[in-house]
Length: 197
Image 1: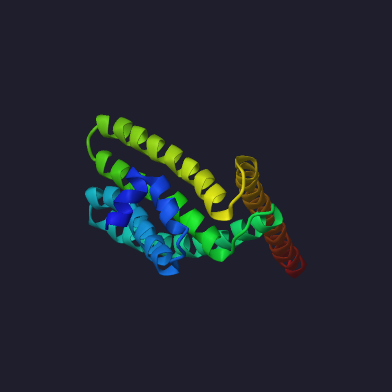
Image 2 (image 1 turned 90 degrees about the horizontal axis):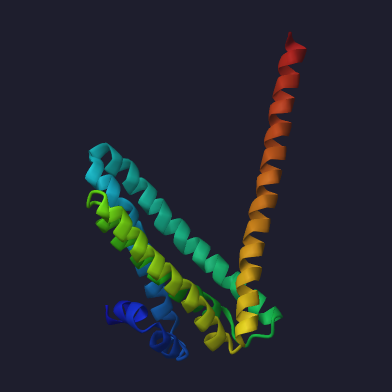
């Protein structure tokens, strides 16, 4: 529990502590942050009623599972990018960097969800909280990348750009292939229906 508070209050101290390799701590933080994120997504539907809560609870479980899987995968991608850019480290450094990056944002989502239950002012307060913690997340990403992979700020910045560009490129290509596949599928169905007439 102390580690969770230290990540928010003193992220530089947490990153320094992460240099002492402890994969189990990283996995525990990974699980904790996605549970916190899931709880944040669950609070508002719980306030809306039982039907929304049932739907939201299923979505929360999916969010936790997919969040963990994607964090593990993007930890690998960050490690690969940093090795190409001359960083010194392995999967532990990549995963730990992402786990430490996501945690402040997850905490912000939870606090903003609680605050959003306050009419009108809650939305504004939630925005302020998420803004502060999102900035902390990005700053933590740069600092953890620099410290754990032992690179300069320019390479850490390039790694961030490579990650975002790679993600959007993969998303775009997947979307285009999905649309092309759907078009081919529906085109064949329309053609088959026309031949029957």
